[in-house]
Image (cartoon, rainbow, N blue to C red):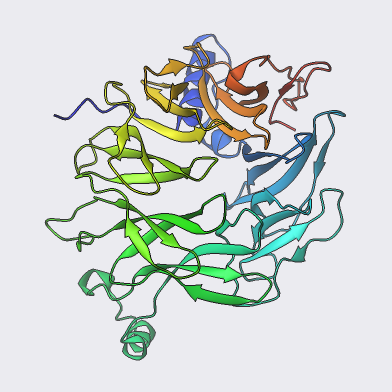
Length: 410
Protein backbone atom coordinates (compact mmCIF):
# COMPACT_ATOMS: atom_id res chain seq x y z
CA UNK A 1 0.00 0.00 0.00
CA UNK A 2 1.36 3.40 -0.98
CA UNK A 3 2.06 5.83 1.83
CA UNK A 4 1.56 9.59 1.43
CA UNK A 5 4.26 11.41 -0.44
CA UNK A 6 5.87 14.36 1.31
CA UNK A 7 6.62 17.68 -0.35
CA UNK A 8 10.16 18.07 -1.63
CA UNK A 9 11.49 21.25 -3.28
CA UNK A 10 14.22 23.87 -3.17
CA UNK A 11 13.85 24.81 0.50
CA UNK A 12 16.47 27.54 0.43
CA UNK A 13 14.63 29.32 -2.40
CA UNK A 14 11.30 28.94 -0.61
CA UNK A 15 12.81 30.38 2.55
CA UNK A 16 14.11 33.39 0.61
CA UNK A 17 10.75 34.01 -1.05
CA UNK A 18 8.79 33.66 2.20
CA UNK A 19 11.27 35.94 3.94
CA UNK A 20 10.73 38.48 1.16
CA UNK A 21 6.95 38.26 1.61
CA UNK A 22 7.30 38.75 5.36
CA UNK A 23 9.53 41.77 4.82
CA UNK A 24 7.01 43.27 2.41
CA UNK A 25 4.18 42.77 4.92
CA UNK A 26 6.22 44.66 7.52
CA UNK A 27 6.72 47.62 5.17
CA UNK A 28 10.23 46.67 4.13
CA UNK A 29 11.38 46.52 0.50
CA UNK A 30 10.51 43.13 -0.97
CA UNK A 31 13.22 41.29 -2.85
CA UNK A 32 12.68 41.06 -6.62
CA UNK A 33 13.11 37.93 -8.70
CA UNK A 34 16.21 39.43 -10.32
CA UNK A 35 17.71 40.27 -6.94
CA UNK A 36 17.07 36.74 -5.80
CA UNK A 37 18.73 35.30 -8.90
CA UNK A 38 21.76 37.52 -8.38
CA UNK A 39 22.20 36.50 -4.76
CA UNK A 40 25.33 34.40 -4.25
CA UNK A 41 24.99 30.78 -3.15
CA UNK A 42 27.32 28.43 -1.30
CA UNK A 43 27.90 24.70 -1.30
CA UNK A 44 30.34 21.77 -1.49
CA UNK A 45 31.31 22.11 2.19
CA UNK A 46 34.10 19.65 2.99
CA UNK A 47 36.14 19.33 6.19
CA UNK A 48 39.88 18.71 5.82
CA UNK A 49 41.11 15.27 6.97
CA UNK A 50 42.87 16.97 9.92
CA UNK A 51 39.59 18.69 10.87
CA UNK A 52 41.16 22.15 11.00
CA UNK A 53 39.90 23.69 7.76
CA UNK A 54 36.90 23.65 5.47
CA UNK A 55 36.47 23.96 1.71
CA UNK A 56 33.40 25.49 0.12
CA UNK A 57 32.32 27.04 -3.17
CA UNK A 58 30.67 30.38 -3.74
CA UNK A 59 28.58 30.89 -6.89
CA UNK A 60 27.62 34.25 -8.38
CA UNK A 61 25.71 35.23 -11.52
CA UNK A 62 26.55 37.75 -14.18
CA UNK A 63 23.97 40.59 -13.94
CA UNK A 64 23.50 40.66 -17.72
CA UNK A 65 23.73 37.05 -18.89
CA UNK A 66 22.77 35.45 -15.53
CA UNK A 67 25.43 32.82 -16.15
CA UNK A 68 26.67 31.25 -12.91
CA UNK A 69 30.35 30.93 -11.97
CA UNK A 70 31.71 29.14 -8.90
CA UNK A 71 35.03 29.55 -7.13
CA UNK A 72 36.66 27.63 -4.30
CA UNK A 73 37.31 29.11 -0.85
CA UNK A 74 39.15 27.83 2.22
CA UNK A 75 38.11 28.62 5.79
CA UNK A 76 40.51 28.12 8.72
CA UNK A 77 38.73 27.28 11.98
CA UNK A 78 41.48 28.49 14.32
CA UNK A 79 42.22 31.87 12.75
CA UNK A 80 38.78 32.58 11.26
CA UNK A 81 40.50 33.51 8.00
CA UNK A 82 38.87 32.84 4.62
CA UNK A 83 41.02 32.54 1.49
CA UNK A 84 39.85 32.43 -2.11
CA UNK A 85 41.84 29.65 -3.80
CA UNK A 86 40.63 29.87 -7.40
CA UNK A 87 39.56 32.68 -9.70
CA UNK A 88 39.41 31.36 -13.26
CA UNK A 89 36.79 33.13 -15.43
CA UNK A 90 35.45 29.68 -16.35
CA UNK A 91 34.98 28.76 -12.68
CA UNK A 92 35.65 25.64 -10.64
CA UNK A 93 33.50 23.01 -8.92
CA UNK A 94 33.42 19.87 -6.76
CA UNK A 95 36.54 20.42 -4.60
CA UNK A 96 37.86 17.42 -2.66
CA UNK A 97 40.78 16.86 -0.31
CA UNK A 98 43.54 14.56 -1.54
CA UNK A 99 45.69 12.35 0.75
CA UNK A 100 48.77 14.48 -0.04
CA UNK A 101 47.03 17.61 1.27
CA UNK A 102 46.21 19.14 -2.11
CA UNK A 103 42.71 19.94 -3.36
CA UNK A 104 41.39 18.41 -6.56
CA UNK A 105 38.56 20.08 -8.49
CA UNK A 106 36.85 20.16 -11.87
CA UNK A 107 37.21 23.05 -14.32
CA UNK A 108 37.30 23.87 -18.03
CA UNK A 109 39.66 26.78 -17.43
CA UNK A 110 41.73 25.87 -20.49
CA UNK A 111 38.72 25.20 -22.70
CA UNK A 112 38.28 21.50 -21.88
CA UNK A 113 36.76 19.92 -18.79
CA UNK A 114 39.48 18.32 -16.67
CA UNK A 115 40.61 17.59 -13.12
CA UNK A 116 42.98 20.11 -11.55
CA UNK A 117 44.89 20.22 -8.27
CA UNK A 118 45.98 23.14 -6.08
CA UNK A 119 47.74 23.59 -2.74
CA UNK A 120 45.59 24.94 0.12
CA UNK A 121 48.46 27.35 0.79
CA UNK A 122 47.96 28.97 -2.61
CA UNK A 123 49.86 28.99 -5.89
CA UNK A 124 48.91 27.99 -9.41
CA UNK A 125 46.65 25.05 -10.09
CA UNK A 126 48.01 22.23 -12.26
CA UNK A 127 46.24 19.50 -14.18
CA UNK A 128 45.96 16.33 -12.12
CA UNK A 129 46.67 14.23 -15.21
CA UNK A 130 48.08 15.39 -18.54
CA UNK A 131 45.92 13.05 -20.56
CA UNK A 132 43.09 14.08 -22.87
CA UNK A 133 41.37 10.75 -22.27
CA UNK A 134 41.34 11.20 -18.49
CA UNK A 135 37.91 11.80 -16.90
CA UNK A 136 36.95 15.31 -15.81
CA UNK A 137 35.01 14.05 -12.80
CA UNK A 138 34.06 10.88 -11.00
CA UNK A 139 34.47 8.92 -7.79
CA UNK A 140 38.01 8.54 -6.40
CA UNK A 141 39.19 5.38 -4.69
CA UNK A 142 40.14 5.95 -1.04
CA UNK A 143 43.85 6.23 -1.91
CA UNK A 144 43.11 8.50 -4.90
CA UNK A 145 44.98 6.22 -7.32
CA UNK A 146 41.92 5.42 -9.46
CA UNK A 147 38.77 7.14 -10.65
CA UNK A 148 35.45 5.43 -11.35
CA UNK A 149 33.31 7.34 -13.83
CA UNK A 150 30.57 6.90 -16.42
CA UNK A 151 30.82 7.38 -20.15
CA UNK A 152 28.39 6.64 -23.01
CA UNK A 153 29.34 4.05 -25.58
CA UNK A 154 29.77 5.03 -29.23
CA UNK A 155 26.86 4.52 -31.60
CA UNK A 156 27.09 1.45 -33.82
CA UNK A 157 26.02 3.71 -36.71
CA UNK A 158 28.43 6.52 -35.74
CA UNK A 159 29.35 7.42 -39.34
CA UNK A 160 25.73 7.66 -40.48
CA UNK A 161 24.77 9.49 -37.29
CA UNK A 162 27.50 12.09 -37.75
CA UNK A 163 26.12 12.77 -41.21
CA UNK A 164 22.64 13.24 -39.78
CA UNK A 165 23.97 15.70 -37.21
CA UNK A 166 25.79 17.58 -39.95
CA UNK A 167 22.55 17.84 -41.95
CA UNK A 168 20.58 18.67 -38.78
CA UNK A 169 18.55 15.52 -39.28
CA UNK A 170 19.23 14.19 -35.78
CA UNK A 171 15.80 14.34 -34.15
CA UNK A 172 16.32 12.12 -31.12
CA UNK A 173 12.62 11.45 -30.51
CA UNK A 174 12.48 9.16 -33.54
CA UNK A 175 15.83 7.49 -32.87
CA UNK A 176 16.24 4.07 -31.38
CA UNK A 177 18.48 4.02 -28.31
CA UNK A 178 21.90 2.90 -29.50
CA UNK A 179 24.23 4.18 -26.79
CA UNK A 180 24.45 3.11 -23.15
CA UNK A 181 26.23 4.63 -20.17
CA UNK A 182 28.93 2.31 -18.87
CA UNK A 183 31.24 2.48 -15.86
CA UNK A 184 34.98 2.82 -16.39
CA UNK A 185 37.99 2.85 -14.08
CA UNK A 186 40.92 5.14 -14.83
CA UNK A 187 44.34 4.41 -13.35
CA UNK A 188 45.97 7.79 -12.63
CA UNK A 189 49.59 6.59 -12.53
CA UNK A 190 49.36 4.36 -15.60
CA UNK A 191 47.00 6.58 -17.57
CA UNK A 192 44.88 3.59 -18.56
CA UNK A 193 41.10 3.35 -18.79
CA UNK A 194 39.13 0.11 -18.39
CA UNK A 195 35.41 -0.43 -19.02
CA UNK A 196 34.00 -2.64 -16.25
CA UNK A 197 30.29 -2.83 -17.14
CA UNK A 198 28.65 -3.85 -20.39
CA UNK A 199 25.29 -4.66 -21.93
CA UNK A 200 22.36 -2.66 -23.28
CA UNK A 201 21.68 -0.88 -20.00
CA UNK A 202 22.55 2.50 -18.46
CA UNK A 203 24.60 2.48 -15.26
CA UNK A 204 25.16 5.39 -12.87
CA UNK A 205 26.59 6.56 -9.54
CA UNK A 206 29.74 4.42 -9.18
CA UNK A 207 31.08 4.51 -5.61
CA UNK A 208 34.21 2.79 -4.28
CA UNK A 209 34.28 0.41 -1.32
CA UNK A 210 36.59 1.50 1.54
CA UNK A 211 39.18 -1.15 0.55
CA UNK A 212 39.09 -0.21 -3.14
CA UNK A 213 38.16 -3.72 -4.31
CA UNK A 214 34.54 -3.09 -5.27
CA UNK A 215 32.33 -0.49 -6.89
CA UNK A 216 28.62 -0.20 -6.17
CA UNK A 217 26.27 1.44 -8.68
CA UNK A 218 22.64 1.67 -9.79
CA UNK A 219 21.15 0.47 -13.06
CA UNK A 220 17.75 0.23 -14.73
CA UNK A 221 17.57 -3.25 -16.26
CA UNK A 222 13.90 -3.14 -17.26
CA UNK A 223 14.72 -2.59 -20.94
CA UNK A 224 12.43 0.43 -21.19
CA UNK A 225 13.34 3.99 -22.14
CA UNK A 226 11.92 7.51 -22.27
CA UNK A 227 8.84 7.60 -24.46
CA UNK A 228 7.84 3.98 -23.97
CA UNK A 229 4.20 3.64 -22.84
CA UNK A 230 5.30 1.07 -20.24
CA UNK A 231 8.44 2.93 -19.20
CA UNK A 232 9.73 1.85 -15.79
CA UNK A 233 11.90 3.83 -13.35
CA UNK A 234 12.79 0.70 -11.40
CA UNK A 235 16.52 0.82 -10.68
CA UNK A 236 18.42 -1.76 -8.67
CA UNK A 237 21.79 -1.73 -6.92
CA UNK A 238 24.67 -3.74 -8.32
CA UNK A 239 28.21 -4.43 -7.19
CA UNK A 240 31.17 -5.01 -9.50
CA UNK A 241 34.78 -6.02 -8.89
CA UNK A 242 36.99 -3.04 -9.71
CA UNK A 243 39.65 -5.14 -11.43
CA UNK A 244 37.77 -7.97 -13.15
CA UNK A 245 34.43 -6.38 -14.00
CA UNK A 246 32.36 -9.29 -12.64
CA UNK A 247 29.09 -7.77 -11.37
CA UNK A 248 26.10 -9.05 -9.43
CA UNK A 249 22.72 -7.65 -8.44
CA UNK A 250 22.18 -6.78 -4.76
CA UNK A 251 18.55 -5.56 -4.73
CA UNK A 252 15.44 -6.82 -6.50
CA UNK A 253 12.58 -4.69 -5.18
CA UNK A 254 9.65 -3.71 -7.39
CA UNK A 255 10.43 0.00 -6.92
CA UNK A 256 13.58 2.07 -7.49
CA UNK A 257 16.60 1.45 -5.22
CA UNK A 258 19.09 4.35 -5.31
CA UNK A 259 21.89 6.26 -3.60
CA UNK A 260 24.04 3.41 -2.20
CA UNK A 261 26.43 4.38 0.63
CA UNK A 262 29.12 2.03 1.95
CA UNK A 263 29.44 1.34 5.67
CA UNK A 264 32.85 2.24 7.17
CA UNK A 265 33.86 -1.44 7.36
CA UNK A 266 32.70 -2.14 3.79
CA UNK A 267 30.32 -4.93 4.86
CA UNK A 268 27.00 -3.13 4.41
CA UNK A 269 25.36 -0.75 1.97
CA UNK A 270 22.67 1.74 2.97
CA UNK A 271 20.36 3.09 0.28
CA UNK A 272 16.95 4.56 -0.41
CA UNK A 273 14.19 2.25 -1.60
CA UNK A 274 10.62 2.72 -2.79
CA UNK A 275 7.84 0.17 -2.46
CA UNK A 276 6.32 0.76 -5.88
CA UNK A 277 7.45 1.98 -9.28
CA UNK A 278 6.07 5.49 -9.71
CA UNK A 279 7.14 9.02 -8.84
CA UNK A 280 4.53 9.54 -6.10
CA UNK A 281 5.95 6.85 -3.86
CA UNK A 282 7.92 7.39 -0.67
CA UNK A 283 11.63 6.63 -0.23
CA UNK A 284 12.59 4.49 2.77
CA UNK A 285 16.01 3.82 4.30
CA UNK A 286 17.28 0.26 3.86
CA UNK A 287 20.49 -1.69 4.41
CA UNK A 288 21.78 -4.83 2.75
CA UNK A 289 24.87 -6.97 3.31
CA UNK A 290 27.51 -6.74 0.59
CA UNK A 291 27.64 -10.55 0.54
CA UNK A 292 23.93 -10.59 -0.31
CA UNK A 293 20.78 -11.66 1.47
CA UNK A 294 17.47 -10.00 2.31
CA UNK A 295 17.51 -6.19 2.70
CA UNK A 296 16.29 -4.57 5.91
CA UNK A 297 13.91 -1.60 5.71
CA UNK A 298 14.68 0.62 8.70
CA UNK A 299 11.94 3.22 8.15
CA UNK A 300 8.95 1.15 7.04
CA UNK A 301 6.81 2.79 9.76
CA UNK A 302 8.20 6.29 9.18
CA UNK A 303 5.75 8.37 7.14
CA UNK A 304 8.21 10.73 5.44
CA UNK A 305 10.54 10.30 2.49
CA UNK A 306 14.25 10.15 3.31
CA UNK A 307 17.45 11.45 1.65
CA UNK A 308 21.03 12.42 2.51
CA UNK A 309 22.18 9.11 4.01
CA UNK A 310 25.36 9.05 6.13
CA UNK A 311 26.97 6.46 8.42
CA UNK A 312 28.37 7.03 11.89
CA UNK A 313 32.12 6.22 12.14
CA UNK A 314 31.42 3.04 14.14
CA UNK A 315 28.86 1.82 11.59
CA UNK A 316 26.14 1.38 14.21
CA UNK A 317 24.01 4.42 13.36
CA UNK A 318 22.64 5.93 10.15
CA UNK A 319 21.80 9.61 9.74
CA UNK A 320 19.35 10.90 7.16
CA UNK A 321 17.22 13.89 6.23
CA UNK A 322 13.43 13.85 6.06
CA UNK A 323 11.29 16.55 4.43
CA UNK A 324 8.22 17.46 6.46
CA UNK A 325 6.13 20.12 4.75
CA UNK A 326 8.43 23.10 4.20
CA UNK A 327 10.91 21.86 6.80
CA UNK A 328 13.77 19.42 6.43
CA UNK A 329 15.01 17.74 9.61
CA UNK A 330 17.93 15.48 10.51
CA UNK A 331 17.27 12.06 12.02
CA UNK A 332 19.28 9.10 13.26
CA UNK A 333 18.39 5.43 13.56
CA UNK A 334 20.27 2.39 14.80
CA UNK A 335 21.30 -0.05 12.06
CA UNK A 336 20.05 -2.85 14.31
CA UNK A 337 16.58 -1.26 14.13
CA UNK A 338 14.38 1.01 16.19
CA UNK A 339 12.54 4.30 15.88
CA UNK A 340 14.06 7.31 14.06
CA UNK A 341 15.11 10.07 16.46
CA UNK A 342 15.43 13.75 15.61
CA UNK A 343 18.98 15.00 15.91
CA UNK A 344 18.14 18.71 15.96
CA UNK A 345 14.71 19.35 17.59
CA UNK A 346 13.96 22.55 15.68
CA UNK A 347 10.83 23.12 13.57
CA UNK A 348 11.93 26.49 12.16
CA UNK A 349 15.01 25.51 10.13
CA UNK A 350 15.76 23.40 7.07
CA UNK A 351 18.81 21.30 7.93
CA UNK A 352 21.24 19.20 5.89
CA UNK A 353 24.31 17.28 6.99
CA UNK A 354 26.98 18.45 4.55
CA UNK A 355 30.22 16.82 5.68
CA UNK A 356 31.75 14.72 8.46
CA UNK A 357 35.37 14.92 9.60
CA UNK A 358 37.58 11.90 9.00
CA UNK A 359 37.58 10.94 12.70
CA UNK A 360 33.82 11.41 12.91
CA UNK A 361 34.00 14.02 15.67
CA UNK A 362 32.80 17.05 13.68
CA UNK A 363 29.92 17.87 11.38
CA UNK A 364 29.24 20.63 8.92
CA UNK A 365 25.50 21.36 8.96
CA UNK A 366 23.72 23.82 6.67
CA UNK A 367 20.53 25.57 7.74
CA UNK A 368 17.87 27.85 6.27
CA UNK A 369 14.89 29.58 7.87
CA UNK A 370 12.37 32.34 7.13
CA UNK A 371 14.59 34.93 8.81
CA UNK A 372 17.95 33.51 7.74
CA UNK A 373 18.07 32.04 4.20
CA UNK A 374 21.44 30.37 4.73
CA UNK A 375 23.90 29.47 7.48
CA UNK A 376 26.54 26.82 8.02
CA UNK A 377 27.53 25.48 11.42
CA UNK A 378 30.33 23.38 12.81
CA UNK A 379 29.07 20.98 15.45
CA UNK A 380 30.04 17.89 17.33
CA UNK A 381 28.59 14.61 16.08
CA UNK A 382 24.82 14.38 16.62
CA UNK A 383 24.59 18.18 16.45
CA UNK A 384 25.95 18.89 19.93
CA UNK A 385 27.57 22.27 20.65
CA UNK A 386 26.12 23.93 17.56
CA UNK A 387 25.73 27.68 18.13
CA UNK A 388 24.26 30.58 16.18
CA UNK A 389 26.47 32.66 13.90
CA UNK A 390 26.90 36.43 13.88
CA UNK A 391 26.42 38.50 10.72
CA UNK A 392 27.92 41.82 9.77
CA UNK A 393 25.82 44.67 8.34
CA UNK A 394 27.12 44.02 4.82
CA UNK A 395 26.00 40.37 5.14
CA UNK A 396 29.57 39.08 5.18
CA UNK A 397 29.21 36.48 7.91
CA UNK A 398 31.91 35.98 10.49
CA UNK A 399 32.09 33.40 13.26
CA UNK A 400 32.29 34.49 16.85
CA UNK A 401 35.60 33.91 18.53
CA UNK A 402 35.47 30.99 20.93
CA UNK A 403 32.52 29.30 19.25
CA UNK A 404 32.29 26.52 16.65
CA UNK A 405 29.88 28.41 14.40
CA UNK A 406 30.55 29.36 10.79
CA UNK A 407 28.47 31.33 8.32
CA UNK A 408 28.88 30.66 4.58
CA UNK A 409 28.87 34.34 3.67
CA UNK A 410 32.63 34.63 3.68
